Every structure is written in C-alpha cells, then in structure tokens.
Length: 323
Image (cartoon, rainbow, N blue to C red; front, side, top):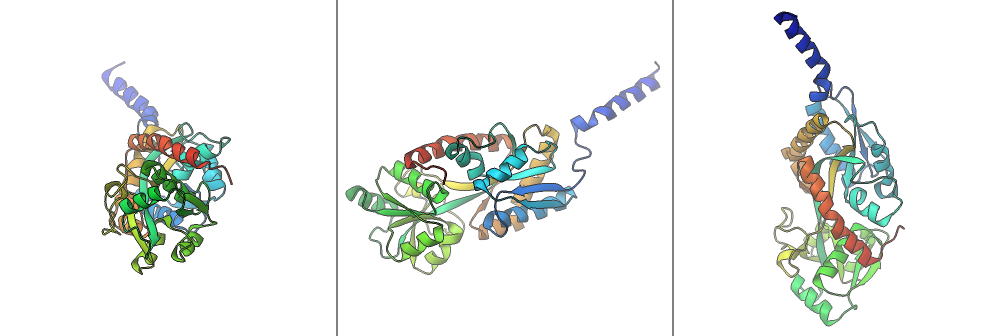
C-alpha cells in the first residue's frame, strides 16, 4: 500500500469513527423538551425562556412537551426511557431528582442511574415570612421566641411533603426549635391565613411573597440563600442572622437519558450554560424569583448527590408520605 492509499484509508476510517468522536450530525432534528409541570407556571416559563436561546444556538426547534403528573414522575419516566441521543431532554428539578425518590419508594426511575445531568440552570430561594405585626423582627428573635414557647408557633405550607414544608423542616431542625405544622392546599391559602394572623411563620418563594412584603402586609425575616438575593437586597440570609449554615432552595436543571454520548452531552452543556447565563435569561429568571446558574455535568451530579441527605433528613423528620 503506497503513501497515498494509506492516507486515503486513514481518512476513510476517521470518517467512519467521526460520529463517535464528535457529534457532527447533532442535532439532526428538533429536540423534545419534557416539562414536568403544566403550562403557564414559573417552571414552564423558565423552560420556554431557555428553549428560545437553545433554538438560536442549536439551529433546531425545541418542542415543549408539558407532562404534569405525580410531582414530576410522569415526565421523568418518559425521558428515562427515551432514546439516549440528546434529542429528548428533561427539565429536572428538586422534586424529580431528590424528593420523589425519597417520598415514593416505588418511583419508576433511579435519579442517579437513569439520567445524564447536563447542567444546573436555576435556583429559587425562599423567604421566611411572618405577619407585619409579629413580635419577632429577626430570625434570632423568632428562634428565641420558639424556644421559649415550644410547639405554640404554627408554620404553614403548601401541603405535607411540599418544598415549602420541607424547607421549614430543615429550618426547624437546624434551629433546634419545635413548631406546629399546618398544611394547606397551596401556598396562597397559607399566605392568606398568615396575613390574617392565623399562622405565625411561612416559607414562600420570592416571586409569590414579594408583593405582600413590598406592600407591608408581611415581613421577611430572612432568605434561604447563603448570600443576599438581588430582588431582596434588604433581607439578610437566614444563615447570617440566626441559623448558621442554613441553605434551602428549589432548583431546576437539564438532564438527558443515561447513555447519551459524551460528545452530545458536551454540546448540550455548552448551549444550556450559555442560554442560562444570557442577559435576557438572567433578567427573566430574576423576575420569576430565581437565580440563573449554569454548571458542568460533573458539578451538577455532585450537587444532586449533596442534596439527597439534606432533603432525606427533612422528609424523615416531617413524616411526609405520598399524598
């Protein structure tokens, strides 16, 4: 075989191997973005915001497929069983990746085995709220009051096992206090009773709580992030004002089915991170009470693994069961 033949042979072999080395034909058709929530909610809006930027970068349409049900179980199962070629992705979240597998033992997927994390996308903190006339005006004062009157303070939530319930359980446990849980069918009803004085404490998302905080009907004692949040710069982190180390937030990311080739994951990661950090996305997420993030797949995997023990303890302490 002369030099020319050898060169042609080598080039032909490289051409055959190219798809496994670099996804030259990815994406070859529109991507399916499965959303575990109904249209119109904050998670759906954030996913659609992300999809606009992904479309621009990938040159393919992103088809939004809303599949609510089972707290995200329906959507997660669809993606876990999808073809692992990068054309089906999931808006994975705290409930899908962490809470469901703990609360529901027979959940039909394994969050760590059945998905390939692409990137953490956003984090949504909670505000610790009281009535505007509540005697405690800081986290330290609230903790002191709860310790002086164990079990007499009521805290509301959007329901047993909801994230608003569990972030409060994490707070209660770390602060070493006893409070009585009052579950509601939605956080709006709990906020109404808080304003009416029927509750003393409520953890609520920034976007939902801010109108009542700004109007003076409710007081925000602290926020669940480790640093101050852009929308509420006047509210100190709970970790700095009474409960050191406290951190709790719901989050969203993008996951693909396990087995998706690494070169395809690399393309997805770059485009998702760029989309999440785009100024328009950052601005839109802030309006929804969320902080845009972006991470490597390895960082996202480590993050999920670190979340599991914290939420597991909160769920076990609360006695939460499937509703």
